[in-house]
Image (cartoon, rainbow, N blue to C red):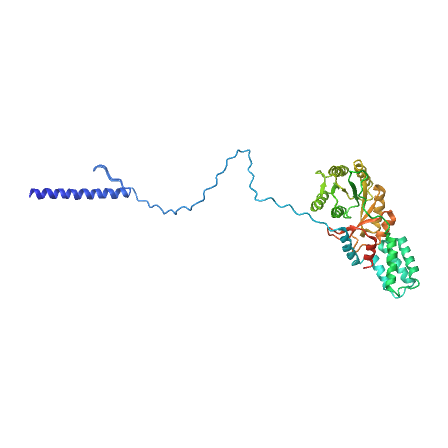
Length: 399
């Protein structure tokens, strides 16, 4: 009996011990504090639910950064060198004139209109000739040349009249060519007086005649002929003039000498441009001067100073006067005064289309005794060409 009771007590103790041990293990897994002695109360920590955290997205390791000192500037990497804009290839002078002649033939200027009307009448009487002469005068041909042409045509057509229109046209063409005078030397003088110096071309004119644009277009003509050119931005009174000229030069790879100071001495800029041309062995230096009113004595005197300063470095081989062909008699007054100040050697006629009066070609040559050397018939970059007397007459006659 005692043996059975002893076995029961041992088994019961084992069961109680295991139950207590199980409870202790479960309490520790839940964060509970199990008392170390029976006298101490059991403190149970509150159960806190931890929210689910999404798995981190894998991130590529950053490239190591090389430390630099504060004074060192790290330039960003450049994938490739920027492409240099391709230079433009100017149109050849020969093809320019053919194109400009076609445009002249399509214009409706007063001289072309007078000639067309003469060839369209059935009978040449005194009234027809009077009207013809009056129209020639209004075309800026001038009284003297208009009278000469009328007299020559009356004597030539007195016998046959215009019964044979082709014959009449031939006579008219011959008399016009004689007036325009193909014997004049219209080539630009680009031969330097001293070997090794550049040829120097000064371009002058009043405000608004398109002088700076003409310099840019002339640079294209010379580049098309295979010459090296330097531009001198001596128009220092107009803020945008130097920038405009530099843009023209950049398009054909021509360097522009300019001042960074507004209102700088134009003679100094012109001198520097010629000096640059001489140092580089350049063929031609084109000097753009400020536009000025022909009535302003001080400005005109300054133009003479620019020329004198340039010639301390190299002689000026050409002085081109830019005239707006639409200004008529006012343009003639300008031409005479400029010629007195700087000894003009050639004329550039711009805007010789549309409303222009083609007779100014003859009149300006008669007044100044210098030839029209270049003519412009539009706004295009290559709408400037060496003047050709026969081509001009053909265009006027609509051929």
